[in-house]
Image 1 (cartoon, one colour):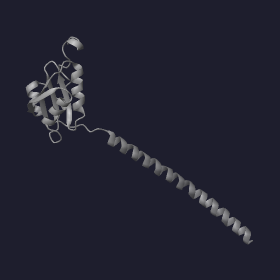
Image 2 (image 1 turned 90 degrees about the vertical axis):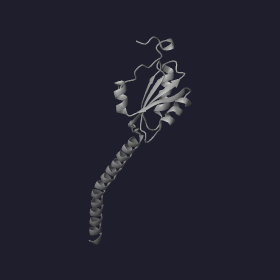
Image 3 (image 1 turned 90 degrees about the horizontal axis):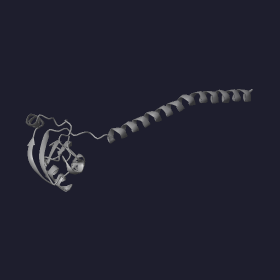
Image 4 (image 1 turned 30 degrees about the horizontal axis):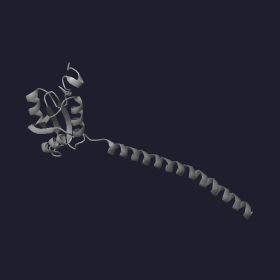
Amino acid sequence: MIGTELDNYTHEFAVHNKENAMPKKRNVINTLLILTAIVVVGVFAFSVRLEASANSVAILRAHGMTCGSCAAKIEQSLKGTKGVASVQVNVSGGEVVVGYDSNLVQPEAIAERITGSGYGSSITQVLTPDQYATMTGKSLAAARQGGGCGGGCCGPRQ
């Protein structure tokens, strides 16, 4: 009798534990999935570059630009600068217009980056975005105007 009762108890205990193990296993799997999702979202959140907002506009004169490749070189050197929100290069006018966050970068540092990329540069004007828009009729968000060399290696400007 005792052996039978012990067998029944052991069987009931095993069945009870098996039934309880399934929800626990599901909970562990769900918890792992949630943690994985949180990690993935966190990685993506940190990998997204937050764009700087421009509260100032520097107009610089760049010396030695001859073609669109020169403009691209200047744009690339400035786009990697913390605080730079937009870059517009006009090769034929020798002008670089940079929208930037004055709390993160100063126009002198922008000029140094241009000089460091192989072109002499000097600051012509520093304006607010509104002053720039009033003066030129263009916003900083406007597409690059007047890029390219206007002839020579890049072909005639249309």
